[in-house]
Amino acid sequence: MSSSSEAGPSKTTPDLSLNIPLHVKYIQNLDKNKDLAYHLTAHIRLNGVYWGLTALEIMGQADALDRDEMIEYVLSCWDDEAGAFGAHTEHDAHIHATLSAIQILVMQDALGRADVDRLETFLLDRVQPDGSVTGDSFGETDTRFTHILLLALTLLGRLDSLRALYNDKGLDLVVDNVRRSMNFDGAFGSRPGAESHGAQVWVCVGSLALADRLDIVDPNTLGWWLSERQVPSGGLNGRPEKLPDVCYSWWNLASLSIIGKLHWIDRDKLIEFILESQDLDYGGIADRPGDWVDVFHTVFGLAGLSLVGFPGLQDIDPVFCMPAKLIDKLGLRKTYTTLPRMDDKYPTS
Image 1 (cartoon, rainbow, N blue to C red):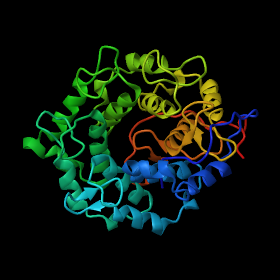
Image 2 (image 1 turned 90 degrees about the vertical axis):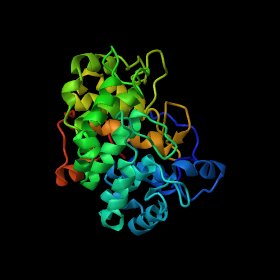
Image 3 (image 1 turned 180 degrees about the horizontal axis):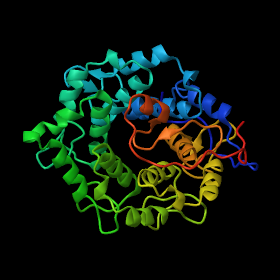
Image 4 (image 1 turned 45 degrees about the vertical axis):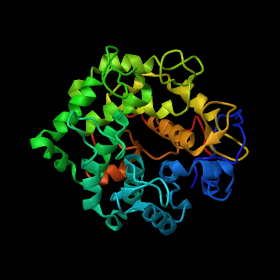
């Protein structure tokens, strides 16, 4: 599955309905057109499979893709030298691809097919003495990788191994690095001293939720910063004075959900912005109305709609970005709030 799209620009829907069958078909077709964009996105192919599967889960259509074929593809991305997963067959292992592989296998009830011990070793090797986390052996650090580390270890049931790292200070070091990435506006950056950004807020707030350290967050200040990201069109941006983008319907809303401030945004205006970003000819959701669609914005647009209670969708967990019923079943749910599921004001096809 590719994160590219063979479809055209999004077409505005006058009745503001969500066309679920069309979006399911769009995801099913992602691997059928081996165009240039398909080959240029090999570096995020496994992530694209996770995005597509999660989108289908939200729409209640998880069986729309072949389970066995998906599992075999995930396993083909294993980098035996590193003991983790790459983004595509014969690609080097990376922490992001590894999380996507774990999430897919958990959603498909196939985690037993993976070498959990080697995955644990790879993940723990990413933790640096200052608490920062690298994506691979080349050493780039980012708070995104911190959230990925904690998500992956939690799903593997190996978070205690992080606690034991660095003389039983591993988790504390990681948490402190996140704390030092918090800015005066209550939001977070990619590392200490970096600019606040909506996506980085989610990974940092999600990290603190997984570590049971949300006490570090000032919910009122952060909630203000996040709610200020909504612009007159109803969409959300990631930083002040930037254009709105459908993907922030996830990053910003999930953070607001975790800190209990989801009601601080205008739900109806946001829903309209997302629905207007649909492609009504071929399916999929774009970053904003009139642009080209892709699976990345499709999943996060749907996830944002789920968080605000859009009718006909399945619940999504704002910490894991996985089906809430699955996270509940695994006993991994953290505290968060969502908006009540709406009536049929916005119909689904």
